[in-house]
Image 1 (spheres, helix red, strand yellow):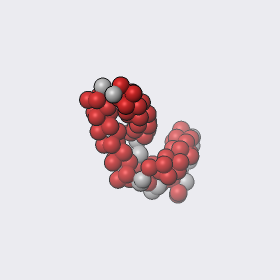
Image 2 (image 1 turned 90 degrees about the vertical axis):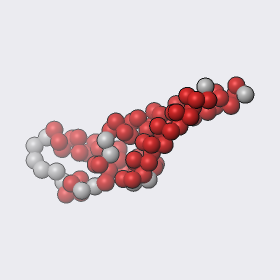
Image 3 (image 1 turned 90 degrees about the horizontal axis):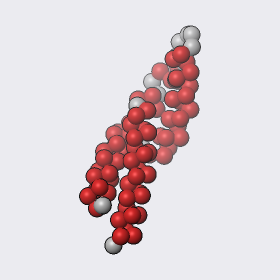
Length: 87
């Protein structure tokens, strides 16, 4: 269990460092959601991208990295708690 916890923590930290390179943590996540939705909506519709969406840092984060980081963070916290309860 300890090895799985360590591996999960390392992978989560790697994804977090990637996100930190673009913009730090929860602030980025709360800013990313509306920008991602607006970008997805304009991408499917006619016309050009709004000026504020063309160069925003929030657009640079792939959905897979954001979702993967969240899932791995939850798994890491669960594994840490299970490891603590075992010993």
